[in-house]
Length: 265
Length: 322
Image (cartoon, rainbow over all chains, first blue to last red; front, side, top):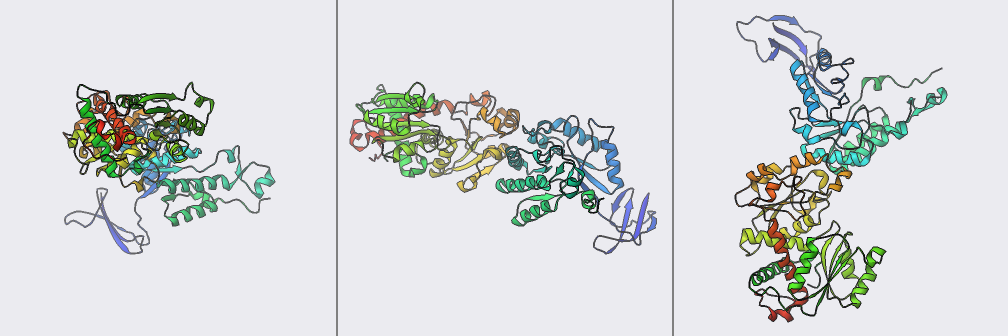
């Protein structure tokens, strides 16, 4: 089926038409071709989104999600590329596992699936995984993360940041100091105090972000902060970016919207 | 030149003088007489605080071929293992009349300490200090390169030399970078970023993370030893991955220019940084390096101890300074 959608607005506010032939966007109408005309007035057209942080759970937790179901969800929401976190079973810490995930994505063909490799073997934070082997695999992995776990040991983090410079890679950090968050239940503050729940201090996240931007700066490598949740963390990233540190960060909708309730009774 | 503490202190002329003298000594050693009376009555002490086989034996052979008396002093089984300070050791050696001390120490800067503190009058020769320098290794490497690719003549201008591996912990690499550049060669360091020192950009060398892209365009490839104990410090994920990306093997050997040579300061980890067939290939000059080491160390001892006053005792063509 071919479409001619008129009067759309692009991200800059300009009015544009979109022409599609058999599912592919093309520049111009061709004579002799039939198009279904659609009025796009009041609608905005956006480029395909990229989700840097998804969990497709395959292999190992297919009951929760698979590359196929995740791909369906992605395209339904306008995402044309997703990065899949490596906390699967087995962990995506070898060329074999990342290639498996990459091939599943290709096989389903709904969106680009880019596996993220684990930084350390089994995401245990002790020994570097074969990062070069994952990079040289068919999946060409360039982002590495122990997401779900923090790369807490500063020496391991330093080495990982240095090592990925070989192929211009990025370390994506789950910033959470494990000692400061043992058995923690909620944001540490007035409410955790009143409820008697073990507090999770903002500093547990911010201390790791601060340490890692300094490490990235020292060894001149690339750092990404996963699901940043605190204003203090934003300040650290902002200041680092201003100095020219190669750091990026992401935030999730619930961390923007689901704030600590001020007037809890 | 009173001591040989680092390549850093050496001028290009002095370096070249050592190489020229070594050429002459090597030539003379090929004759029927292998021993010269030059350093008769002089005492050379090998003071080794760190295990070493080839460097110590090489210095011992060099001193003996020049007829010096050699005293081997190793940390094990001596007062050194009982915690005698470097100062006390030096005073002892001075009292015994050591004319030269060849020192190897695990602490960077130990030979400088020994020479600068005036605890003893003899010449100090650095045989490897920590992760700082190993000047005679660099000199014997330069000698070997010059012999193979420049017919023992002149400097190393126009040559492109790759040093591959654990640059961070390598005194061999540090001395070689300084010396090879002094002699006009262009140096490329190839290593994973974890094994390059922060600040390497100030060394005036090219740095690459890819052996495959550099290897077709070098005249010399010098492989550094990977110390297996470093694995605990996470410099690379596995030996397998290191070997895949930074190891010399038959395939990479085939990518080299026809005249290019392979070097290794030893001891080698065959199968890790260098495959057995690469180490034993026709390109390999690893055994020559060991042989040349004796000539180069003879030249250093000769120039430091023999000097101008002894120049007539053997016919050395090169200009000799005291």
